[in-house]
Image (cartoon, rainbow, N blue to C red):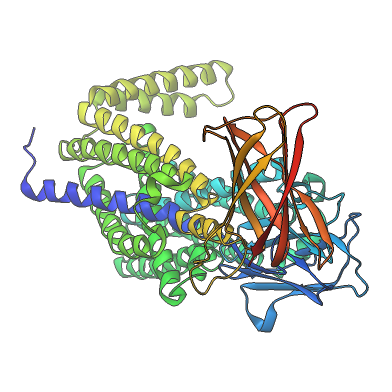
Length: 630
């Protein structure tokens, strides 16, 4: 056994670095930031004096709109929007829909759904009021569009199968052209083509139901299919199907004419070389086009530097396909018991190393563009899945080190005389007695003996057995790794999560300057007139602005100790606008302390706060204070 040299150690270190970068970027690449709602006009929870002409939404990135992207529901649940939603002034990160004339007072619910520039559907809902808040039959949760669970599950399976089919198709073809072509390798490549073709067709049919929140019954709806084909993701899926037609011709030539010319000794070497160049150029174009169907419709086409991100993403996907797809082709060859020459295994090792170098170059850029901050690794769901993926890649790289050691110990083997004799006997027996039942039985027996002899011969070769087992373990980890990558492609990444939280903290408004308004603090003495009826209420309204606020109430007796009372109510009234009373929903947190974390005051102005304290069945008092809401 050879001792690893410094060069081999550096190669292993580089492989580990590239694999970690691949884990940070392949999943992050396929799951770029989903669009987050950053502002609405009217604002969420606000009260406007008259009906607005249109409802406007602003997102963190560009979105694709459909006929039902923005729906406005009145207090009775009827639609009052008019016309088709459209972008404002051509800005792709906005959406607006007109409101019907004559909308009355009350609380309205706006339900929105769109498709992010990275092809993932996003949806939500918010409310606003005209004149004054009112009761409504529509809840925010029921109004928001939700992807049907069955459609979402099948769509996720389709995405997984599409990635897997692409990897097997490209990796199998490259392995056949560079390392060796055989029947098992052909099965890998053709299986990848079939998987990619079927999954792409399924994704095209499921796309409409997936983005619109409809059930499985709408999968064959031609109107939805027409809407899908008019979008960028739909065009990418259709382009993928057309490219697969060219890939079918490429497979026929690669495993047909090219193999026959290699077996025909009378064929000129120049003809085979010309065919090899043609296959290399054509295969690169087809494989690059297939990879571009992901890049042109998902993360790389949105965000910063799309002109550079798209070709980098194509190169990254091709590097992953050559590495993992070639690994699957090598495993299929070893599992079939076919002889693998050391030169062929070493060619794949060099090919995999070149793929790793490509992943290093593209991974550094993708990490800078997509991953975000290190704190997001543990603070978000996306980051935690990413850590799982990094662990799996580290395990895979460790297994690859053992495969590399077994490859170095391979020795070209020749078929043993015993196995050759058994195979020859099986062939002669099958041809020498045509039509005979006895001959057929003998042929099957000899074939079984030949297979058993080949298996014993294969298992007796320790380096090949070790290589087969290590490659099998690598492939098993790669299958799980691909599943985690698919999960990452549908998970909100850290950058988008931060944008969503920032938008939520701002109440759906775009803040240009930091809010330095202090909370409103009141100290109200009270005396119910009974025993232990005297005390002080300390009330805080934060941030004391129109919209969402937090109300804190603390009661203390005459000695300053926290005290509970049988009943405590707080309400707000705006007399000039004739709004109210709006009663706070107080929740007891501790002795003498209550809170309403969802108090909404619809507009700015001078509000009257009414505090009612009851200390016994007959002792009660109501105190009034003014509160300024900005």
